[in-house]
Image (cartoon, rainbow, N blue to C red; front, side, top):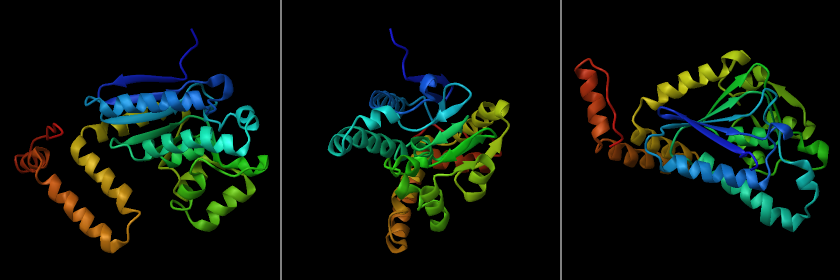
Length: 261
């Protein structure tokens, strides 16, 4: 039996989703994306999972990009209807996931790898990590949401330089640009990610869900619409048991115990 392209393990409230194609540097193809989508659906429905970590198998790559041989086998319409349709849908589902997501970037994250990172909430990089959108060197450009997400996350002139040249970005430069949160030694990557994930997982899953929705949808609204949207969401939060548990715990000088209700 062929080994699965997506592996999932759970450590308490933290799930770790590993892209498991080290022989191709974890390149993304349609079967892998469909496996990823199915795994994400299961984790979204599992109330015991509060945070989802994405990483890559092996020591060399997080995701080295799309499967170039697969891409080269397609013409435009077939690509649009098959690979592009799937990768756009899956990355948007990841971006819109109600549960916080963390990228544990253990190595190269090129092309589709960087595009996946752009859809994740928090990005922790190994010092060995390299990011980049090198599609231009193949006569292509980023087509999995990368052109649109990167210009919303870093200065436009730097986003254009990255896409026009296809140059790689070091882990330290990615942090300085605002593409990632921090860089850690390679041997400390997963322990640091688990530390952050555990801290987030201790918070109210209900409040995290509503907060994520406010950030995701509010970012696409004018301020005049986003502010009343936020007002409505915080009203919902104050109807939750978790909000009152948190306030009561503060007043009583004890740790809060959130139940997601």
